[in-house]
Length: 169
Image (cartoon, rainbow, N blue to C red; front, side):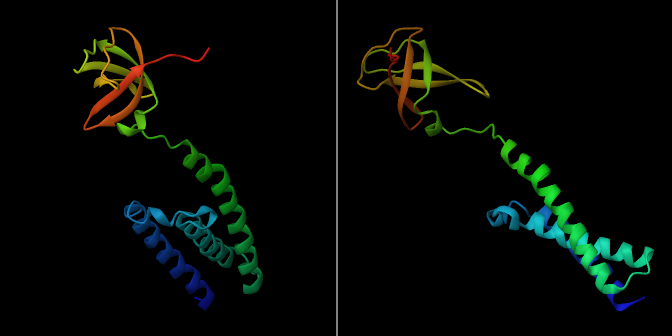
């Protein structure tokens, strides 16, 4: 076994192990995701260099310099395609179903339990995740009737402060 063949083989094994560790601990090091130089693309690039180099050494009689150049070119092309056609669309398609009460501020809701003056009622907010009901009170301590549309102004300790919604005309 030639020395360059051993380098490609050991590189392939080491990068494969690092990739497995990265998959297991990706959430812990998620902040390293900075564009095209994120760990996924770097590991992909190195993995395909080693794999292409090892395969070319086994299947061809080319000299080592040519094999290294071809391996770098092939790895660059495959990594580019993987990044722009798989990783970028996956990153932009990621949608969380989680929400916070503060993220609902500015939304329009509907009153399902009338809100008395200086008291509490209940509102429902329609989100992409479904319908959410929350405790509410009038922002200016005003009374709001059943089935009125309200604007969520503030949230404090799980209570939504709302005002009757007046759409712009």
